[in-house]
Image (cartoon, rainbow over all chains, first blue to last red; front, side):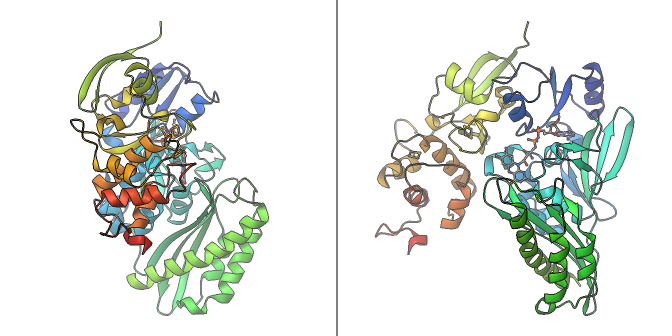
Length: 291
Length: 166
Ligand SMILES: Cc1cc2nc3c(=O)[nH]c(=O)nc-3n(C[C@H](O)[C@H](O)[C@H](O)COP(=O)(O)OP(=O)(O)OC[C@H]3O[C@@H](n4cnc5c(N)ncnc54)[C@H](O)[C@@H]3O)c2cc1C
Ligand code: FES
Ligand code: FES
């Protein structure tokens, strides 16, 4: 059974932050509960007060801001993203990703903010958002701040967010002309075994810029700069990518992979190279379509 | 004294006034307090789907969902599928296709399928498979369950062969 707690339902973010301060160190933010209730049930965490963020208008909704960036509220569920026509138009790779997170029940309950804040190393969105250069908007006792996703995850289950801060929204820059963003994963159980995200930009006949991120392989999702460098300068032709992809796969194989129930470290390094190929091709075809 | 909250839980169209602790799960309240024992608790970690119920038509894991969160929403359990003693098309098709053996997964399967068909009344076989991906059956091998869902969706031809199997 879940240990007893009080449930607070603030009506606004400022009220939520005041409630958190009143509860001292003994409160946790609560959204879909798919992780939090689970760890409390297992006796791994205990809080006197859960502060429900689901109903806060500031954390709801999906929109495009004045700069053209996609803004997703922290309490938006996986399912809402999966079914959003705005996300389908602005970042189709995220719709495809969300459709394969967990199972349909976890997608109906779980939020993107809860996923990122829990910082489980096998996160789908974390890896893709890392390649997409997203940032998160936080609001806590000390005011509001923005943090790039690159640097948000510090170690498994630990982020740069302080406990009093609420993740208000995730902001993903608009794709530049000629830019494509894709995500591929291998999955044997509920969560991804290994996943690779690629963002690249084409100009003329060449890939001029590429960012590669890998998840579920090292202890936190990371960018692999050498893999991006290997792709930059390559021809914008899916049949002519053999050497750059091989160099990218080699860079992935250098990473400090962690074996787990989804596979050994060696197997994960192998998978990362395979997924780099499919993610690069998918990103390239989106980039060419947008050029 | 432990905090309790007064709820008016709307389950299968009927309001139940009930006082619960915030920590009580919807699965426990439905089973232990309201006597709705159709849903089962098996894995208790959101993986097996035996506890699947609908909240405002969306499938959730009642094992890991607070009863207090159902306040203001409509809960549907397997007991709510039959209308005036008439089995729902899904209940009938599960019988016709022999889609259960021990029956432990069946209430959850039917609720997952109910949500799926409400959203997509004419799913392909692949969409049915994706829709019940999070519901585990240890007996049937899934084929009769998938057939039953397709049959309920009207996707079975006169010879009784489901579209995807041809
Ligand atoms: C069976 C299962 C399978 C899964 N499979 C996958 C998968 O394939 N891929 C994947 O990426 N994920 C997977 N997940 C993880 C899933 O995405 C997360 O559980 C879910 O998104 C967490 O969101 P939540 O709203 O339920 O968070 P909660 O459980 O409510 O909260 C999680 C943590 O984040 C904090 N928190 C929540 N919201 C905020 C906020 N806005 N600001 C600050 N802190 C906050 C809470 O205090 C808590 O510490 C799986 C989970 C389960 C249970
Ligand atoms: S008992 Fe809830 S999903 Fe298994
Ligand atoms: S019929 Fe026995 S688990 Fe499905």
